[in-house]
Structure formats: structure tokens, C-alpha cells
Length: 269
Image (cartoon, rainbow, N blue to C red; front, side, top):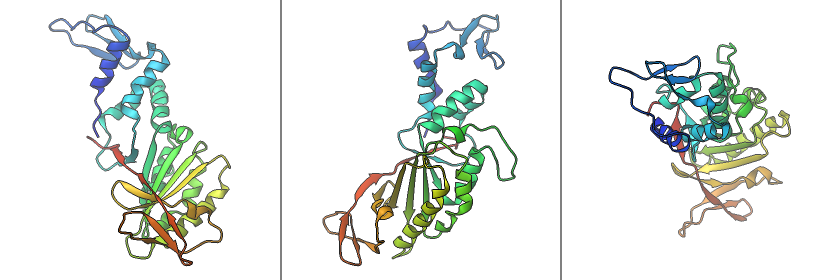
């Protein structure tokens, strides 16, 4: 995914002030990171972002930081250029981080989940503390696992999640890599959710369980989380394309198919 700061410039010029004059030959625009001003070499002030009303600044932050898809946070390719905005100064970091973490759903493989939450909680894997506001703003997460990585949904992860007091929505997506292992994945989810009962009651008001069926689609089988007594369900292939699950008593349920598209962030475009 690529996002351009050219869009931000166009928005500012259209809503705030006319197009600034080009610098004279031999002059170059400069930025003073201490004040937030952009200036020309003759000392004339061209622009100060923090003088804009907060609602306009939020519109600017929304362009690079709000996604209609889930965000897959990968560190494999370094830091995306547009995330450099978070490093401008403390005020911009605070405002932009709120937009980034409050308005998006983060898609995290189970193998990376504990490290991901440790970093966003202000701690890294070495135990050192860092300033990070994500734990105050993060609201929606999606953890993806397979029958091989289900064991990573552990008490250690639950303890880390306790630091994220505003979490409201949890999506658990699994992909069974061997036949007849769907219910093993479901049972891992149930154990994990039982451990989450130790978290504040306001945490995870919305919990969804999905079985991945393709790169962009999954079946919503959240009803298995509330079922009493527990049934043993298996997915049934039907020629008409309807997604059906059947239990040991031959009862059937039609499941809803949902989109699970992701944008890859935190990597260079």
C-alpha cells in the first residue's frame, strides 16, 4: 500500500490558504523542527501545521493513518516513509497515534502477537521501557493462528493484554492446515477466552471467531463460543456453495462469509 504526502499538501492548500509562492532562484525551503514552521532562506514564514484547528489536523492524519482494511503490522521491511510523521514532535505524535491506533483494526499472526503487544505497551522484549501511547488508544485487534500456532495463545499473552485498557474488539481467525483439526483450533480459542476473563469487564465487548477459507474470506462461527453444551462441528461442502457446519447430532448451521482484507503497513512501499 502506498500513500502520498502530496495528498496532504493538496488538502491543506484547498482548505487553508492559497498556493504559496515558489521560492526565488537560489533559495530553498527549510524546516525548523523546533518550532514546526516551514521557512524560506530569507526567513519568511511559509506555514505552521500546528496553527491549524485540530479538526483539520485530524483530516490530515486520516489520509495516511486510517485504513478501510485491517492493518497487517510487519517489521520485515523497515519503517514506511509516511510513518515518519509520528517523529515530527510530541504533539503531532500524540495526535497522529490516536488516529492510527483508535480507528484501525490490527491484524497480528499469533507467532508475533506477544512481541507486538509488548512493544506497543511501552516495553520491548529486553524489558526496557519506552514512551508509547498505543496502549491507551488501541481498540481493535485480530489475531490469526493455525492449528500449529494455537498453543501461542497463552497466559503470557493475556498478561500483556492487561496493559491495553481500551481494547473493545477481538477477532480470532484460524486456518486449519491439516484435515479435521477445526475443532482443535476452536478449543484453543475457548481456553484463551476463558483466560481473558481475568481482564477488566469492559475489555473485548465484541469477540468474533472466524475460519479462514481463502486469502480474503472467512466464515463467521462465533456461535460456537456461546454454545452450551459444546458440540463437535465439521464443515460440510455443498454443491450450491452455501457454507454449512454440521454437528454430531446432524444439526446444521449456515454461516456468514465475511471479508478479511488486509493492508500491509510498517514496511516500505
